[in-house]
Image: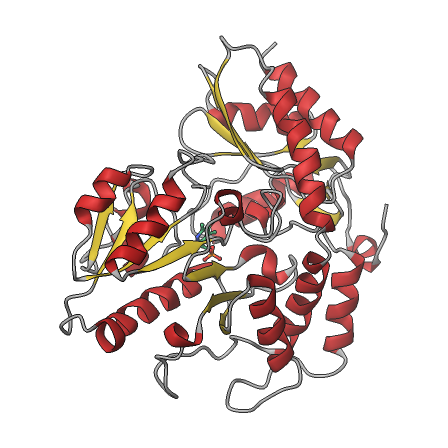
Length: 411
Ligand SMILES: *Cc1c(COP(=O)(O)O)cnc(C)c1O
């Protein structure tokens, strides 16, 4: 296990330290999360160690932000190199990581232009602003009339505009007044989408696989149908691949499974290598070309440290090895999960190293607490569903061991 200086400063590392730290967090942090009672002190690859010295296999990977594992040596080295050079200049000036980052990300996505931000929600906001401006300036929608179609069960982040079109009461209720300009249709329902299309629709915003909703994979014709309807109606197809993209499903983008190319990708999470928040909108120069200086921005967006780490992420993805590993280990994981006893498990969904398991009775929270006791970290979504999204670098034996622990819950 990696030992660093931090450990020497700790007075003791027993259960009472864990309890103290959790009590401190409960007293002084807003209760907008309800974390499992595990206080992590160190991490390496697919494993984390808590303050008591107990090890856990990380089967959540920070909702796919840790696709390459904790502290991947290549990513840590890239960050260290950049820390010794320059970390932040703002976009008021150019820096030597910016051009290469944008060019390399555009090339990975098969697109032309990049607009970098920090968090996923900011990139979604950027996509919304882009689509509206494009709608008024290029499509010719009357000012203030633009509509963006989104889907039931969506998760695109937490800003006031984004929660305005959430269908999850926890995410939405109590945060109005809400931003207008969105139409919600059932996920996977092409007839409903076709009926919702009109001249004011500037974009359709979709997750190719709905993550927070419980790793919902749409019917096979859905994404090609969205592509067709968008093309037919002159609307932008925006794929939110913040969680599904960058190797998670066994391909660089989840859209590839359906042979679909959207007009815009929204990326985040794994793009920062688990080290810094990095997000981006990637599209054509026709679309992102709508922005003129001063019309959108971010102090930290596209900073040198973020670009240096993201460039290493892009280089790692360019070889295809992580995608291949996700596809291979993911197929094995899904083989085993689909053999779970059917009276205990209603459904297993997903692609690559990404699975939603819907238990028949077991509440997801209880399942995750049980798994934590067994040394596996996972996260519930709604009701009786848990999701598994291990780092793509997870060892095959470790993966099998984690699935053994899931099996033990339903035996
Ligand atoms: C996580 C996520 C977001 C929001 O990203 P943040 O970095 O948490 O703001 C948006 N869309 C999808 C699909 C996500 O999974």
